[in-house]
Image (cartoon, rainbow, N blue to C red; front, side, top):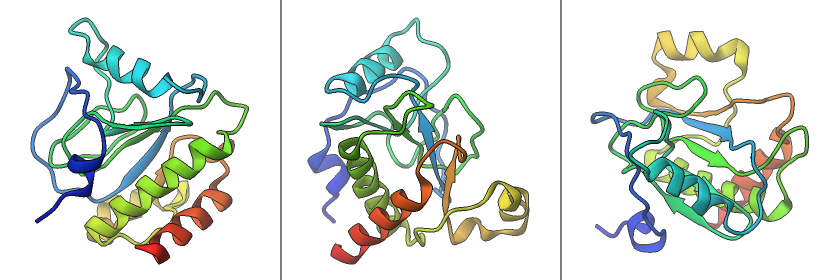
Length: 168
């Protein structure tokens, strides 16, 4: 079976990776950096360093590129709340500013591909739903979790994800 992720996206292996997992969510994390060209590579290279903090995501996205950093079948260690079974995406932007249109489009395309691969609906798991989702087994249906729901343009992002899903 062909794998779009490994065939298309450059890979920068990070130092800190967890054990095997079965993905059940997509946390969208902020990098607290600019989204300019090269930001994703800078973050991935920092995670690659043996002296890096215990932090990593499966993917990091900026205006121009998307990099793979952790294999999909392994756990990552994002800076914010994470669940085993998460395919984490680090989006390069610096709140309170929103991500650029290019960064948002790249992240939405990637998120749609992850949703399709794992048969997740492109839905937002609200902060008030997280405990119920995690404890009651919505895990098999998946969803998208945002680390900064008050800052990230969730509605616009989910519309972009749905548009991308329609094209796949």
